[in-house]
Amino acid sequence: MHRLLITSFIVIVVAGSNAVFAQESNDSIPVAKNVFIMSNRSSVFYKRITDFTMDNYEIGSYVNSIKEQTQGNRIQLKKHDMQGLPQNWVKVIAYKGKYYPYLYESLGGERYQINDSAMVNYWMDGPVAKPIAVVKKLSSETYEVRLKAYLHFDDKVLPHLNNREDTIRIYFISQKNDIAVFKELGNDDYEYRLMIDADKINNYPILVSYDPNNRTVPFRDIDSIDFKRLIRER
Image (cartoon, rainbow, N blue to C red):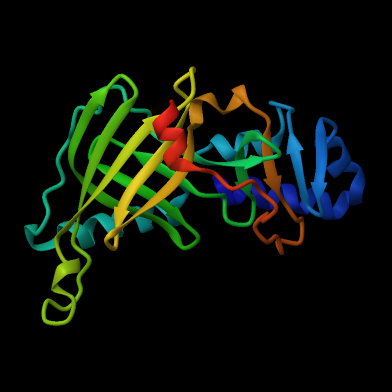
């Protein structure tokens, strides 16, 4: 569905020149070349950023990643009580002191889906799932998700990467409990991301990187985020 929606939109833009794009961008604020802030909740861009429906290719990628993880019963896929943890997540960036859900249109942006049995990363080549081992609700504003991943490395070469357990701590930082810091332990260090519950994206304008010729590069002129401070002062 994603590709059909965007492809049809690109064809319309090329055929109708700037007129259709201007109509689609009536409520947008230019930020840089091919980058703008969109506030029209009826825009195709809002529909795109909140749509996690998989097309046939993406379904195949998801199913194959599950098979790779569970083959030979190395890892069991089990259902978990998610204890109110939202399912669909979209990347948030900071720009001039404000938070914006970010749609990098060429790739669909950085998105996660946490269902009752796996965490799904949406990559350029398709979604990849890691089975969930444990879900804990540590407080009304904090969750912990542990992922069990068998990565099929040669046990003699990289044994520490096989059957490893990744831990993601999710800290809600907003009063509406819609934006959260994802703190992920990987490669002996922590990686931080700011994410938003996709069901609540309509609470915010979104920042879009879009080029009808599909040559968009990620927007770089963004504020740095002190993730540790956000967690500490929430």
